[in-house]
Length: 165
Figure 1 (cartoon, rainbow, N blue to C red):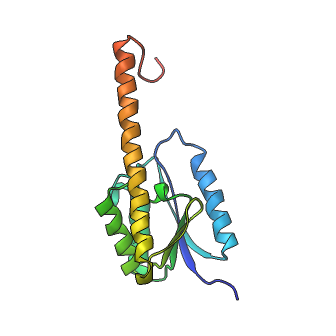
Figure 2 (cartoon, helix red, strand yellow):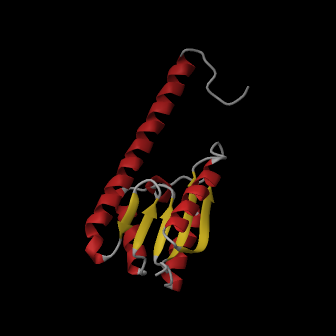
Figure 3 (tube, rainbow, N blue to C red):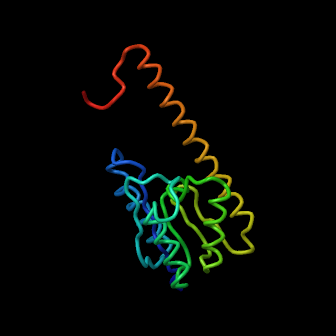
């Protein structure tokens, strides 16, 4: 029997420097959709927008939540990686997942981390997802601090730290 799960796909890249990222993500999501016989309803995209942003500052994700909540025909969300889904803090991530689950979304399926159950039986999966996304959140903060520290160090050494002069 063919799978009738209806999904929304989500593609996100943080900066314009990741020009190949959306196409790579689309390929990964396309494979996931095909391998699982999902029926893709719509693709939401945020290009050049951080996963930390919230609400209307992240219009693709905002539309994804809105679509799931208003139409109640969405069984799942597919994306390449959990860090594409969110880089928000723990409470914001839990809020997003809870809102999607309350709207009837039963799962999030990523190419990188696999299938995550959002139903009541899957509360452990929701907690695991929040922890995984929190890890990406923390990694992103550390990376930002390291980049900033390197730029300060280079500036103190008299090196150029901006773009092309």
